Image 1 (cartoon, helix red, strand yellow):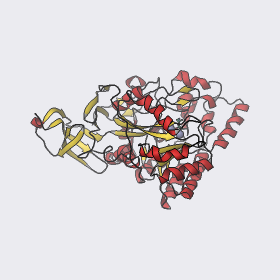
Image 2: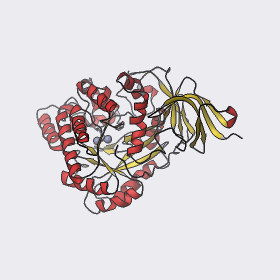
Image 3: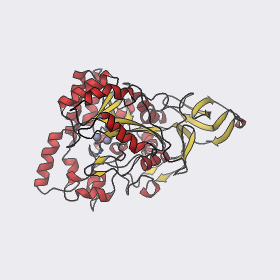
Length: 461
Ligand code: URP
Ligand code: ZN
Ligand code: ZN
């Protein structure tokens, strides 16, 4: 009988602070021991990672699985979405439960748990998107935080989800009193409404008008407003899916003043540019997401911000829709469901394009795993490779060159915005709580094995 259930040997272990060759002994789903050399006889199962890297499992802190949007639902549910995530090296997600107008937060969480329990293949947490402060919503927040729902989201846009500034400030105040963090979708609703109506009246109905109706300056304006409100409420703030230098500048200035403000970006904003909206045959609809993909002059500023710590996390905002669903907006760009897939490719894209933009593997671990775990109350159970942590990790083969095509992916959608991207390596095995759940591009774990992450209080970093 071995001392360990599994031994991963000879891999190059990478954390946010270290990179070294070593062996990892796993027992009962946890990392039991890490040392430079262990004996094969110590373990029931031995995995040889010679020539490969061992990374902490990715944490995708921004997903929309089975989400109602614009008269339809995002096409990945908790089964298909988390299965795809696992193949791509992600071992935890935090998904957004959207409060139905008039409903309680408790019931919102229940609805999302019913979508996830028995389906999720990796561990999952839930942020609650507050859409309605009437009734007893604010009073519910303390007990919701106690129950592990320690982060909230507010949309400044979208007709049936947005809240006004006076409610935003109340949510910021109430949630922060409980040690929770509020993520804010920052865009100016009224400018979007004005520009959208104007374009449609002029017969400008195609997806290429989506980015024009939501210019970068209104993301910067809304980020500034959210930061001012958070300063007044003395509350920490996370500016989610920052897409442009205008919002990054606001986050950087706030941090320079010592305010507890953080920022997130996503691979699509680091790697895609606005020309995509001109793809023919309604192809531009693939990239209709909010905020929109920007001019490529933003790339260097976003990469710099990740490198230098102005932005703390890189998530996906995974929110896929089939092309058939995108066609809901064939005659009106404002009716195209907003969102795009990305859950499976985040780690491979970051590990290929991060180093080309000055990010070390350690920095990539920081923004894709350790920082999300720290900010959202899961560290060091998740987000690192350390004795006592959950044995969540993936083995990455730096020699497995790939070219992205939708057919190799497991996301439940008929396109990827990253079609044709070259990858300089790929995850070849993923472990979640010590169990091998994906191998050589296929999910091998049990369906529905993922557990709810009852998260602790959030931390500003
Ligand atoms: O277009 C997007 N991002 N759809 C998902 C909802 C959101 O705004 O995060
Ligand atoms: Zn958003
Ligand atoms: Zn989102």
